[in-house]
Image (cartoon, rainbow, N blue to C red):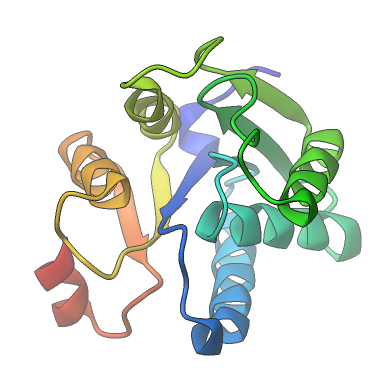
Amino acid sequence: MKLIRENCCCFTGHRFLPAEETAGLRERLRQEIRTLSRQGVDTFLAGGALGFDTIAAEAVLSLRETMLPEIHLVLVLPCLGQESRWDAASIQLYHEMMKQADEVIYTGDVYTEGCMHLRNRYLVDHSSRCLCYLTKSGGSGTAYTVRYAQRQGVKVVNLAVQGEEEQLSLL
């Protein structure tokens, strides 16, 4: 599958999400994906991590099955065996997502210190949009990825906040 940057949106977000926000976040994701689809975005890139990446990939798969058969899910994974230390339920979900994805891309063969950054850069470098879940601007991988996306001219929407002013303070 050839990735056309203008038609691609990547996801980045925290691994740990507040349980009370998950249902609302799933619905916001679905709304944003539908909106982007109407604007010509048909390919969604997810990093395959636990938390936000997983619920974003699930949203794409659900919408593809029910109302947007033209959209695609591409999993961009940092290395083989990313899931090796996860619990059994998470591993099973991960393997199901891999089976349902339109493509799985590995940015590395084995875990290295920088493999997550490489994966994050790949996500951004192949996207014109980024949907994120960013609640803290510190040194997290999500904050790094969002800053990198902004430097690359990628349009970022933070689903963790409501107002534009709050978005700008975190980004």
